[in-house]
Length: 314
Image 1 (cartoon, rainbow, N blue to C red):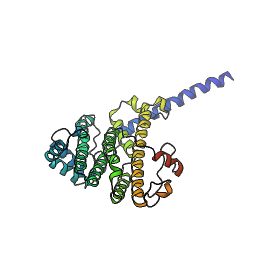
Image 2: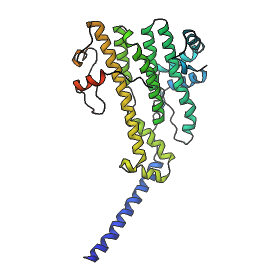
Image 3: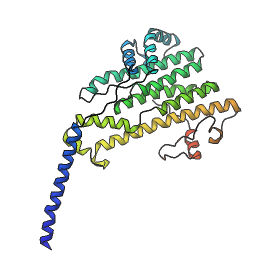
């Protein structure tokens, strides 16, 4: 019996060694694996966004406290910038993702400007509100939401987080004017938001870009650690889980905004607020939105969640 036990130990050690060597070989293989990159669109709307950022004059970050005259001056000064932004939104967009260590240092200034460009679009909407053109303002806020998606398409996690911040600026601004919109504008906004949602990059795609970048800029130890399936032992897994939570929260806010728009259109046409989701589906909303966390589209649960006030923190 003792002899058999001593024989098992070397076998177990050998198996463990082979496993470690296999993981190292896999990590080295992944490091040198060619990365398929889809061709960039031509023309590329992202190039228009870069030019818009380079032509930006002033700081639109204070759009919420600017007077009508200050907003008018800001918008007039940046007429060419707004034109480039809107031109880019009519084109297919994709970032030229780089896998070198210098990629993030190159992208950082562009990402800082990206949020300012979203704020400029919203500033134009605020000016429209001052002129009592609420329906026009809603269109500009929708452009900011769309920009938050297109300006970071093809990027890594940091790109999408900045894009989410841009989207939140548009979502918050649009929510504030929902009760001043006419039914036609509500229907148009819902259709636009559904299109934006349907054309998003999936969470899996963004994580794929992130992992490809990590493979080329991590140590062998970090790459091996990233293969561990247990989140408590794998910091990459923990970061990805937190990122997924952020993505789900973004989806919830967009769904909740569409719910508010549908409720507004229903109220205008029927003369009272809806009482259940069956009042809204399928005329005002195509389907019952999926409730966060549970991942179900139970009408009663969704009604409770989506009829609560929207969190307007950005």
